[in-house]
Amino acid sequence: MFDSLSDKLEQTVKRLRGHGKISDRNVEDAVRDVRLALLEADVNVEVVRGFTERVRSQSLGKEVLASLTPEQHFIKIVRTELTDLMGGKAEELDLAAAPPVALMLVGLNGAGKTTTAGKLARHLKIERGRSPYLVPADVYRPAAIEQLTTLAGQLDIPVHPTQEGSDPVAIAKEALQEAANRGYDTVLIDTAGRLHIDDELMGELDKMKASVQPHHTILVVDAMTGQDAVNVANGFHERLTLSGVAMTKLDGDARGGAALSIRAVTGAPILFAGTGEKLDALDVFHPDRMASRILGMGDVLTLIEKAESVYGEKQAVELERKLRRNEFTLHDFREQLRAVQKMGKVGDLLNMMPIPGLKKMTKGMDMSVAEKELKRSEAIINSMTNEERNNARIINGSRRRRIAAGSGTSVADVNRFLKQFQQTKKMMKQVSKMGMPRGARG
Image 1 (cartoon, rainbow, N blue to C red):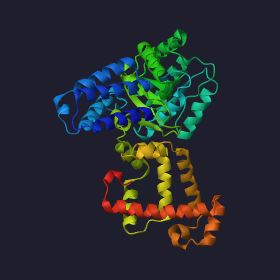
Image 2: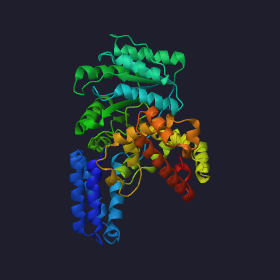
Image 3: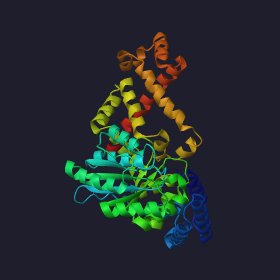
Image 4: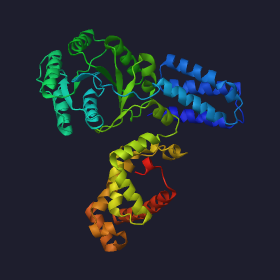
């Protein structure tokens, strides 16, 4: 996501870097490049016009024109404006209302509402300590009720027993009463997909909203639809008055214009970002962090949060102790591999690292190969005995042949893995000696 935009902005900054001081001409050239980059990223035309005017007026200020590091000032201005464009700061879902609090999810067919309903229920249960109740109110799409019921089972979250052919408005109303009777404090209503220009189906949502009076009406938007997503958001907002937006497929190969336009066009904040297919792949949307990622500055805070979610402080301290004492084993390495896989896709994690040149180094690389390599490495470790995992030095030729056969790999794969393990062990020990911020140790 945003790869093309990031590359173009990086080129613009690089051209500024070649000048000792910035001039009016430099500013005009840079602003023109930014305008073209945003338009190519499918950002709304009016949004682009306002954005570039604000960047231009600030970039022509005396502080920037007299600066010896003009590109740093320009980056600062663009980052601030990008952050403001996407909402300024993360907005937590307000649940301060008498229970059960109703949340109604709406959007087009195929936007990912049902999966998002499951992800959001998981988020509310684990991150907010809520007791959610899932409601399948999509009676039109085949297997929609079954899909949400299956997700609810995987999450161990109760689901309303919806009958096919029932009235969606009646389903929502009954579910709200059932949640109140059973003590559930949050109700998530998964509605059927519909076009915002379909007056009859939009009328159904009007009736549901009047009947249930949801605390929040959240639009689920597929980021891959680009500028159309903004038009959809505007149509739904004018009809239903949205509380916020949940964007799906932000990990996809989209141009990103929707994420940069929706807040400015509708006024509705982006609350959540879907970053994968797994049920834990839903993040609170942070405009400032997204702006940093767009500008190739990484996203350390999100990376640390992901690490802490799968690797506790006690584990991190114990790992550091083992590294300092040279006691890091293949058992520990396997735990590290599993933690990385739980954190998300390798490509997404690399994009969060503020390492100069990393993006260029990894450009064009097939990250699925890296994903497979992680699984292959774990398979190799799983084929070892406990003794071998505790002391890799005893793994001789015959043991390597047995491990290769057991893991479905070759002896060359095992040799390469053991070499990588020793290199990783050495590197991690060096990092441990240097010392890291407490939150980053995991």
